[in-house]
Length: 111
Image 1 (spheres, helix red, strand yellow):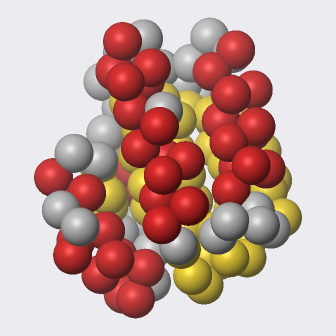
Image 2 (cartoon, rainbow, N blue to C red; image 1 turned 90 degrees about the vertical axis):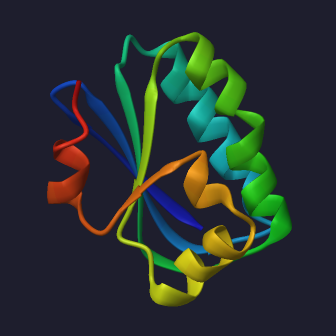
């Protein structure tokens, strides 16, 4: 998993590239933890280059939901392939996470 970090106004963006599974979830977890140190309003996860997500990868995202909510940081996931998006939908995660098609749509989520 390669992760590139970008700051765009009020958004802190993690560009993910690779598979989000048991072997890479700790790396993503660490990057989210580092993001939470920053004074941010939005955390965007760019899924355009994510080919696969496992339950471990999903677990990392879910584990940060309470902290993000408590700190009033909006989590936005964008650019998912239909396969990856289907995993979120099957588990009902699309009802508790903001998932949008593109970066442009993510920018519309700014408060």
